[in-house]
Amino acid sequence: MRMQAELPRHVAIIMDGNGRWATERELSRIEGHKNGALAVKKVIEAALEMKIPYITLYAFSSENWSRPKAEVDGLMHLLNQFLKQEQKTFLENQIRLRTIGRLDELPDENCKLIQDTIQKTKQFYRMHVTVALNYSSKNELVDAVKGMLRDAQLGKLNTTSLEYSDIASYLYTKELPDPDLIIRTSGEFRLSNFLLLQSAYAEIYVTPTYWPDFDQTDFQKAIDHYSSRDRRYGNVRPTI
Image 1 (cartoon, one colour):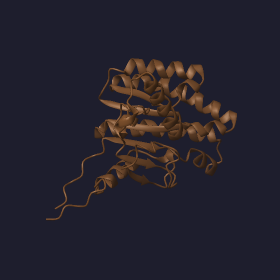
Image 2 (cartoon, one colour):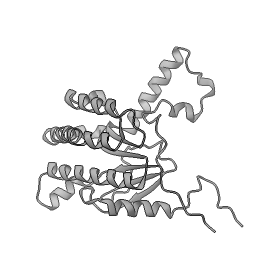
Image 3 (cartoon, rainbow, N blue to C red):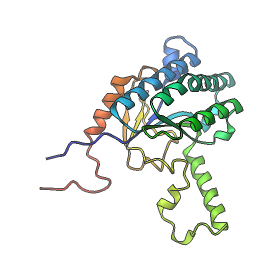
């Protein structure tokens, strides 16, 4: 008899489809991103209710800088608005904000607001919301290798007996558990340079729903799908 699966501890989401959602409605792409921010609030509320302690949101990739300047500027403005509006929610619900990515390459105003929220919520452990900003899994690996080389030169790292756990301790996500579930909206079947190492054994759920339309019901469907999976981590199912 198969035991009932537990809820995922860590859910990571590739929030895709804002632009197509807007285009189909003859709206600007930035309107799609505005509605995508509302979906973020809904998912955080759903995760809180379900007591899922870790949520990671892929908000802005390193490759997104190649988008039109007006769209990038609009995204940075929306990020500021979200932080200002939701900081109270984070404090009231004891949600800790984290970020992963090369944060220092973001505009100064964004960095200041992010760091302010991080500092004000760092004592909370009820829920951890991690936002991937200027993130690339390939850049993460490069930065990890640089850190390892630096520590090896200082005599702080023995490179002759390296294990994966040693490498993981240099990743942006070193303080986070690996994701159990990756959700991708808009129907695309790819990880898009997101948590490639950390997702080695993650279950992947793809929905055709565009991110602005993704709500608590859609989140519940993804969790239910995860709970139906038989996670064996490379092992075989035990026989009776």
